[in-house]
Image (cartoon, rainbow over all chains, first blue to last red; front, top):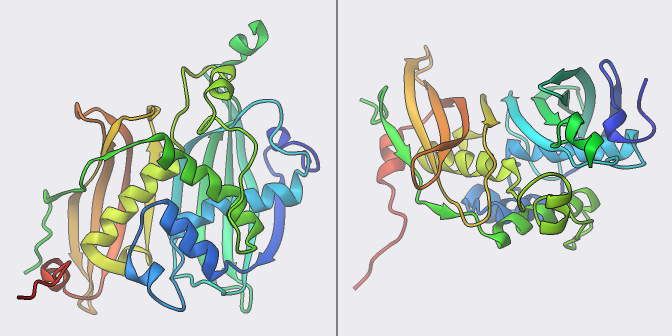
Length: 148
Length: 163
């Protein structure tokens, strides 16, 4: 297991969470505003829908829970977002997120980490979003890091 | 008859990837995590600090890929409304960095349409974000199920004119 320190330590098979939480109306509106998604079902209702892309930031919640020392020595670069949305999610809905490191692998001198996040309704374990996130642990190839 | 057929291409209005747009996204990370009704700022990142970006081997700040993903999702919502959110899927792959002030156009092209027994339509789309020269920087695909009439949504006025 490589949880407990930096996110850059994460290895295949590591489990992050689960964490239970709600996304407030405030953060849903703020997220949509920051991405210029000014659609009425986000901004003009008392019960906004949650854009499925917001699941990506639950990775940070899982990182904070399982890797409290932070990012590590180098910046991550996001490579791929891949989400399957089973049903709509709403602000203030009780949620549970669990992460699992599906793969850690090397490609052209860079280290890739793929995490699968399973977002469910906390009340009855209904699947809401299944998300696969792929990042490069360090933008610099290992050889460049060694020489810098 | 649906107005979205295989080959139909939807193009958003071009947007410049300004430093401000990059920072708006960066500020969302600690703000969403804190979720206390206030906007938060975090440590320098490759998306808002040139010096830090250069220290990581980049020529300058680059946009978070999720901005492109959200602009593509926004285009789908403009086309089919909240049905773009679920059920369905969305995948985006960031194949080239988006640097400051690059003009980005989000594009969706319908690749297939199927009608379900309940009358809803299931659309498959290729997605990409391109720069002003047409170079693709983000690519992906989506599947959306639409329950209402796309024609009605498309004809819905975005504003009202009164005398």
